[in-house]
Each structure stands twice: as C-alpha cells, then as structure tokens.
Image (cartoon, rainbow, N blue to C red; front, side, top):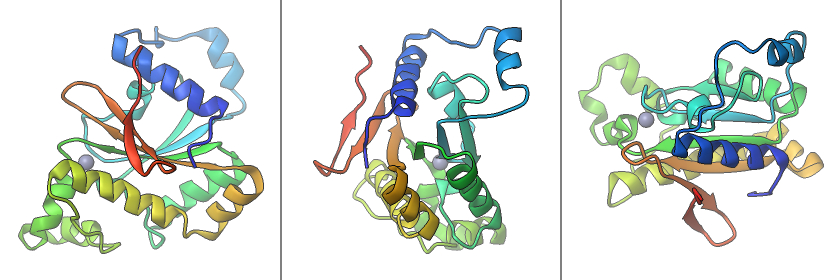
Length: 200
Ligand SMILES: [Zn+2]
C-alpha cells in the first residue's frame, strides 16, 4: 500500500489546490467535455462517508471523469451490500482504477453513534451494525481512524481486490479529513502511523 502513482500524485496536488482555494472547476469546458464524452478513465475510487461536509470531488479538486465516488454512512466496505460491491468490482476490474481510497473525517456522527446503537431507528442501526464495526479508540478521532483501517482490512479480504493488488499493483489508501481546518492525514502502513499531507 501507499504506492506513489500518477493518480495519487494528482489527488494530493488537487488537495493542495483545494486547501489554498484554487478550484479547478470553472464552469462547463467544451474541451474537457469532449475528452470524456464517450469514455471514462478515472484513476481512483473514493469511498466516502454520507456526511454532507465531506465532498471528495471538492477535497481533491478533481474534474469530471477523474474519480468514482461511492458514499455511505461510516464509509463501509460491506461484502453483503450489492450496491457497494457492484461499484467496487466495476471500478477495480473494468475501469482498472489505480487506487481505492477510504476517506474518513473528523466529527463523524456515524462513528460516534456506534456507541449508542440502541438509540437509533432500525434502518440506521442495522446499517451501522452490518459489518459489526466497533467503536475503538479513546477519542472520536481515534475511533474514526480505526474505522478507516477496519474498512481497509475489509477491502483486503475481497478476492478480486487482492488479485488486483497482486497482479497490477492496485493501491489501497486510508485518508482522514479534518473538516474544521481542511487538513488531511494519510495512513502510512510502513510506519504504522498517520501523516499530515503537506500543503506547501
Ligand atoms: Zn461520517
């Protein structure tokens, strides 16, 4: 994991532009639209939480056609969820993305609610409890980060993901976005720690 590739380079460069307030989107661009009108070649799939404050296309300053986004509460990789698995298989095997990224975030209410499942309505409780994800951590930030790692673990237990990692170097990434100040942390599996993504 944590391979450098062109997709990650673009995402982290895009993130720096987002942080500095240099958006790439400037309305409809006929030239770009022409390039993607009949084909898509996204470099990454991002699995993000449902939270309205975390928008992957904005955080990575991407243009249309650059990333596929799948969102659900808790940014869960759930092997029993047909919607999730169909998107994941299509991204990995057909679109051949370079990266699958789990994007967690600060103040994640879905993770916080793992401590109070019994208080939730049935629909929300049964979703949050689907993969029997646990609240692990002394603080909410630690629990969210551990949830990102749990989801990376789920990814690494899916046959076609494992094959893509082995056969063509598919990269699995964990990221944590700080809503209050726009900072971004990246899981570093070699050092077993989270590192802030430089913004300069
Ligand atoms: Zn969330």
